[in-house]
Image 1 (cartoon, helix red, strand yellow):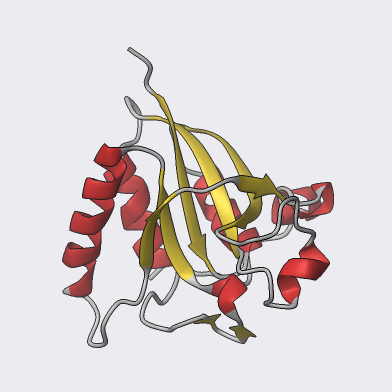
Image 2: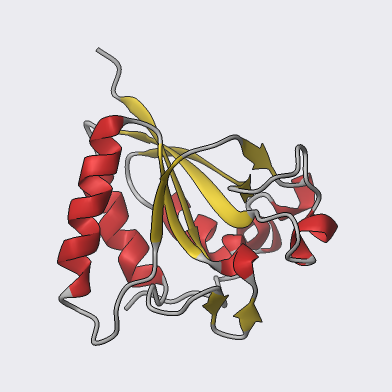
Length: 160
């Protein structure tokens, strides 16, 4: 029985989201990329136009014996404001939307339950979409582990 799974989330600028998930014990690897749009092999420049339909996402490969999918979702809810539609802080556009892209039926169930539980902590409705993961397109190399490569702390996300 394999214990390696992939979680894919979008919560605004992918640099900060990736940096926080990369620090979680049990996370094997992270990769930033584009997901949920209509263009194959999109580029950063294309996604920034807001016309491709892609979100800036993070694929998180994890060992479910060490960290559960539910624990990763708990971090996801704390990293951003899931009540703002197509926006995180100063970043505006569909590419910055809040989304959970599930890779298994169990993840879909856990994501829906997690969203209901998270709603208790917010006065406004959560607008996070939950969808079956379409193709995840890795972002350009210069976006991968952006903060770690530069010896910087994430500045576009904080833990609530």
